[in-house]
Image 1 (cartoon, one colour):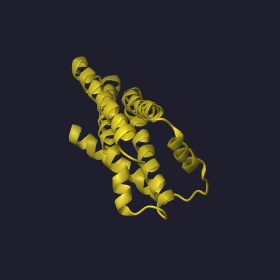
Image 2: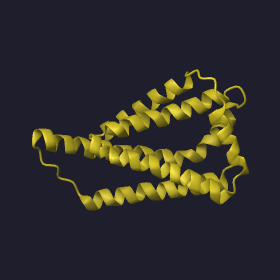
Image 3: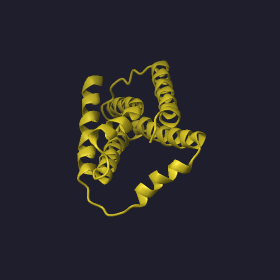
Length: 167
């Protein structure tokens, strides 16, 4: 079941990515906000990235209460955001630069997918429990460990993005 949910998450992410890649909106607000981070200290960048990614992971896990729906929406939005950023910078960046700039984000994408998997999987089990009367059979210890791993990955990703990678 987990593999199926992961595949669904990846498909939803790439649908969002595709939509963002071809979305036409003329505004420099997002781009100027990205450029503002250049004047931040490394600790400020670390905090911004960490807090933002923790929110994403928390929304994905809390998607459990919506039977996984909010986790799916959040994955769609994150894919859209990446596609949109690439769309807005297509004229100024080459493929090599995209790969160089996006590679440090591969850490956080793992945690984002993993947390969405948790929200959807346990949301589905919760749905079956509420509406079908099926046994929920979950291990709180296992969930706690997986959530801690997601947070640890997010912590490492924020460190790598703010202290090692170059924007």
